[in-house]
Length: 214
Image 1 (cartoon, one colour):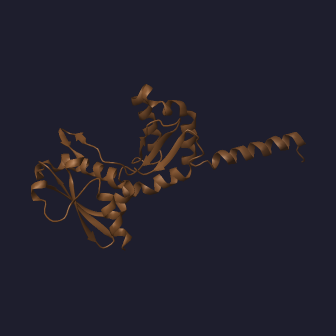
Image 2 (cartoon, one colour; image 1 turned 90 degrees about the vertical axis):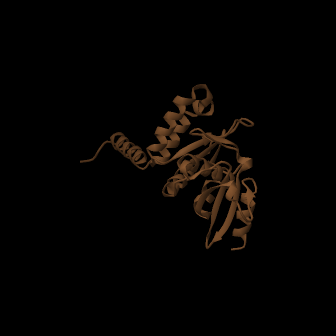
């Protein structure tokens, strides 16, 4: 039995369209959602809590550890950073989502939290001034160990200080380098500082110089 030409054409078209839908990846679906909601994302300050909740929900469909950062508007553009929230196991998810990003004229898409000048952080009743933090860098094979010296730190308050330290290191070195170049991280009071130390702002130069020799 032979199908009429128009019927055959409609069947073929439906098959092609269904194949196209079947081959859309979760990452492509995310970027379609991003483009559909681009205006609200670009101006997220108008309804920040709702916009961030919706964005987080879409990212968590890909990996529950994925998170994000927005940069300020500059010359009609804005940075959008895809982060693994410092969790090494989620790095492949960051890479896949970044690789699937389409051209977006108003956005600069970045993978992993980028390096920038560390700033003061207050969390859980603890306040840390970035300029007062000192760091001791110790080479250890293919990585470096870091001892972070903070004024007023005590071991009893470790759980409050640890998240702040990781945020400060992400600021100074960038998320990727913290997870791939840094080994052990210790926290001490500045009263125990001994030997050569550097500031958080100088830390990237110290670490980069060590790895340049490897």
